[in-house]
Length: 385
Image 1: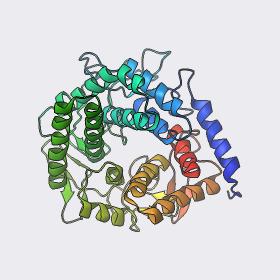
Image 2: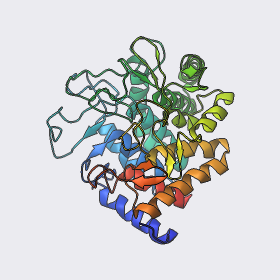
Image 3: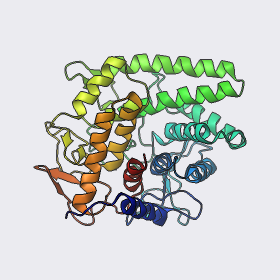
Image 4: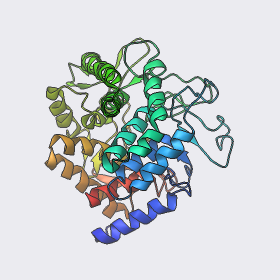
C-alpha cells in the first residue's frame, strides 16, 4: 500500500496512537492488542522519544516506576532492591498467561535506562525539587547496578532468570526460550552501554548535589567498564562487537543491531564507532526500510523472525540517536527516510516488519502490535526533530 505522506497529518495520527496508549497515571502502555500494560523498558524509551514535545510523559513514567522500584529479594518476581520492573498490570495480579506474578522484574536494562531518563529529564527541565524527591530512587538504582546487576564482580551487567517460568532472555530481545542461543548468565552487549551512560550521568547529578566522592567513584567505575568492555566484547575477526558474553565469558559471535545502541552511550572506543556504523549499513544488515535485527549472513537469520532478522522501528531510532549525537547526519537521515518509507508502504508503523527481496512482509495481521508505543514514538520523534 502506497500513500502520499502529509507530515502534519502523520504526526497527528502518530500522536493519537500514543494518546490511545497513555494510561490515566501518565505513562504510555506498550501496545495493542497484546501489551496494553506498563513495561519498564518500553515506557522509558517512549518517554525519551517524547521528551522534547511533552515532558509530563517522562515525569509520570519516572513517578510510576519509582513507586514500583524493587525493595526486597523475591525470586518469583525476580525482584531485587533498587531494580526497575519489567512489566506489570495495575489491575491484575498475574501475567495474562499465568507465567509470573505482577509486578515482574525480569529485565536487565530497565534500571540503567531509568537512570538515563531521570538524567535526561533533569537536563531538560532543571527541576531540582523533582530530582530531590527521587534522589533515593537514584541511589537505589545505582546500588542495584553495582551490587545485584554485576553479581560476579567483572563490571558487566548480567542476567539469569530466577523464576523458571520467567523470561529466559531479559534484554530488549527478550523471550521465554533461548532463541539467542546464549548460556546464562548472559552479559548482553547493549546493556553494558546503558550501564556506562547511567554511571556517567548519575555521577554528574551526584556532583551537582555536592557528593564529589560518589561522583569520582562512579566515573572511575565507568572508565574501567569501558576499558574492559572494548577488550572483551570486541570481535577482532569481524571488526564488530559480540552480541553477548555467555556464562563462561565466551563471545556470542553474531552480527546484530544491538551494538548500534552503544553509539549514544559513549562506551565505544572512537575507532570502533566508525566500524559499527560501517557494519550496520552493510547489505546484510541494511534494507530500504531500516536496519535488520540480525545479519542475513548468519545461519539463524529469518527475515520474518521476531528478533532474528526483522526490522524494528524503535531499534532503528535508538541507533539513529547515536548517529545524530556523533555527527553522522547523513546516516541519521537514511534511517529516518527508511522508516517513513515503511510507513508509506504499510499505511501505519507497526512494532516490527519483515523485509524480503527489498519488500515489506507482514507475517500475519496478529504478529505485531499496532499501535505500538515505541514504534509510533520513533517516527513521531523523527518528524518532530
